[in-house]
Image (cartoon, rainbow, N blue to C red; front, side, top):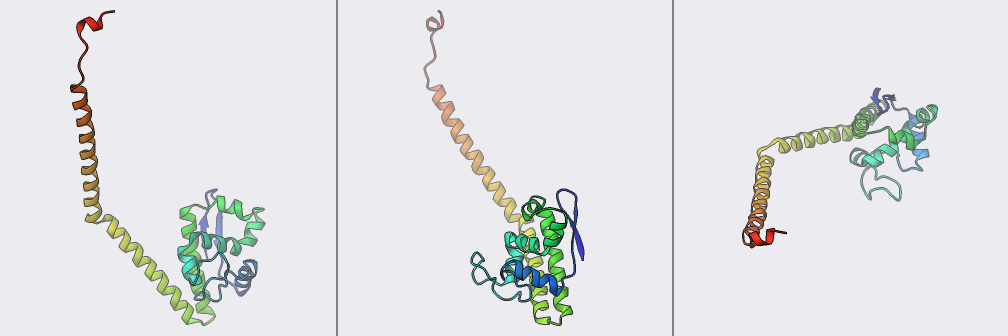
Length: 184
């Protein structure tokens, strides 16, 4: 169980998953989010074709948010809100925290119902995602990006110098006004 805070400063809990919650999400989503089968392709005409549910919920934030709204539906209703109002309170950080909490609870759910195959898949996905983020952060902080910045800056300066040089040359070739032309 864990908490995340929305933009309005309200706390939300990701409760340990129960079979009731899993079946409610499946039923209310029209079978699109079958949390009992994370390795199966997502069900639904608008879903990414052929991708496993766990992959979709990890990398497609719109789908994750939709599933989260189904999961938290009773709590959203208890606060006299609808899904759209809940969405307006969610920003990047709360959504990412909720996603991490959900995956932790989903993993624990599979451990508890003795489905090590699904638990292992979710564990590996979490490790792969962490490794990808670490590699991306290293690349961003690395020297290649600094070299690219220097090249871009040099190209900008080159274009500006050329543009202003042409402008100055044009102004210098423009005949000046004579003293008699300046008098009224």
